[in-house]
Length: 290
Image 1 (cartoon, rainbow, N blue to C red):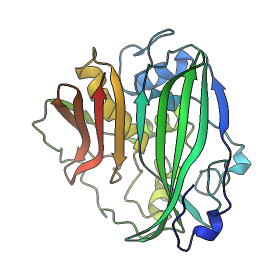
Image 2: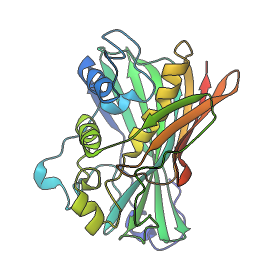
Image 3: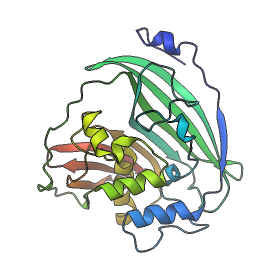
Image 4: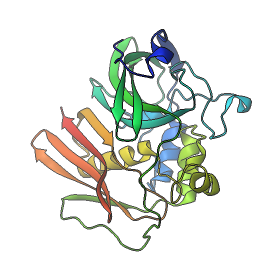
């Protein structure tokens, strides 16, 4: 692991968590739950069907004891959580290579390890970047390899968020693929449940506003990514996704009118994004096809 030379280094220079291997059966139930959340009339995949790209986020979930959660609802400790004081966590993005889709209802194995650790100086202070690499296997064959980039800071930074939310104005786009989304508290609550996410910024508005300084409940980053990928699943259902690269840039909030848009950039790729009227790129993604 490479660690840059600055203030957070003493906390992580000897931190070297080993790889973790986990098993899951990829039950059809989480697929049915997310399908309903996305207003699909039927589950998008049944037992034996290929799992849509990144829907493996519904599996290998961790449920720590209630006493092991911090005041923000996030686990206080974890194998891949760096030992820095007053740790604050942000999901920044990632990459995923799909050699073959995972199959619903079949046993799967995940092998995860820390790939890189680096500290950088940001505009709001020092940040720690941790990349976790996970391999997903079925029947002894590696099907999916994903890297997730997680950003940590020590203490809370000064956020640059709108003070008032415009819940009436909708973004506009002339791109070929479009999917509107207007997340409300029930949608965020259901997504938190299906992904075992207890962070209070997604369901506790007084906490999100009073303690974290947000203007409202924060839409999950993974929900933004999965919404972008719905553009591909619905508009290019016969294309097999070989790789996905995604980045989370600005938070979005409940009540705002979101629009996922995208279009093919050439025969084998597509570019996707999430917009509101105030921001063109809350999240972006690039997809390549097999």
